[in-house]
Image (cartoon, rainbow, N blue to C red; front, side, top):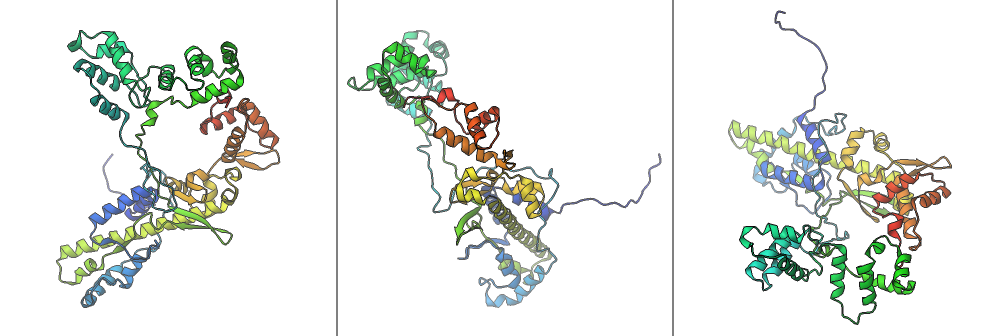
Length: 491
């Protein structure tokens, strides 16, 4: 075939860089957005943070620039401001079409969360940032060990997991010491292990739950009530205790039910995972993007003004184009001015979209705000997409890693979406509401006779909600509720 040039008419979808920026900002979490804004402030001299007393994020900074009302510009630069205003007359749409059906353009960002700035939002802090390993090493350094015993203790601590348990045998520890300590015997490793197990938290480096609990019991005074019986149960009836076979324990120990309750109360005071006492997790926080409150009987939704910094254009830099700057400098200023205006408009569009979606969610889920989880209605992304006339992918971006501060707590916007289950009367019930009902039924059950999944399904059926036993098991597991045979207890 002979190569040739051909003309062809056609239509093709294209996304401008500005629209791509608007979509990307829309899906960013608050913390990621703050970082994005900070990078823009550092890279663009035409951008600056608006520290005025008015904290409402409404895009006024762009309007201030267009009107030339910024008080930071001196009077003798009024002629220069005219040129800056002329730059603003470049054609740019006031509204950014953030909705798009191109799902493969950007994937949802999975950035971490930030720090809450609301005064009425509880702040939870971790107990310490020190790891269990560091804490044990510090105690080893304060303990009088010989050089050989110090090496053994270090090897033991290196084999302790985050829960506080020894993950390898004493034989493996002996082998890990290498050829340098060929004269070390297994008995010496056992002796050092017993010393390490007396470190804080007590019972650390235990090889089993039974050993861990018995070590903690050994620290009690001998006149502690029910101490002897507790040792007996842990030493000789651990399997029955693990299976919650209390009848078998009472039969073999000759303990009455009231006595066994006292024994269990003492055992429950022990820590099965001593490593958990050394909290190493750093507290994570979220910044609510929107807040919901009731005013005069109506639910009101507002953008959190402290979630992102407010931006404006630096008019002094923008006015430099009139002051005899070179063509290169003028082009530099014009380019960055355009970028600054687009960023401000994109942030304004993001807030408008977020507020629109949040208001629609609150309107659909008013019963939740009034009565709680049990009143949650079934709702999917398409319901909100149709209500606000946006694409479902846009709703997904808006609701991912965006948080709502409500009188009932802080929730991710995704939380308000759930599938539906049909009821006997022809209605629908939210899966979130069913989970709340399951949680309520379990909380009210008799501890000695916990409800099975089948029984919970029967109780829900009596309320007109037909749910399979397997579905109940799935909901129960998602709530972190153990099976009925593991929930059985005497106290």
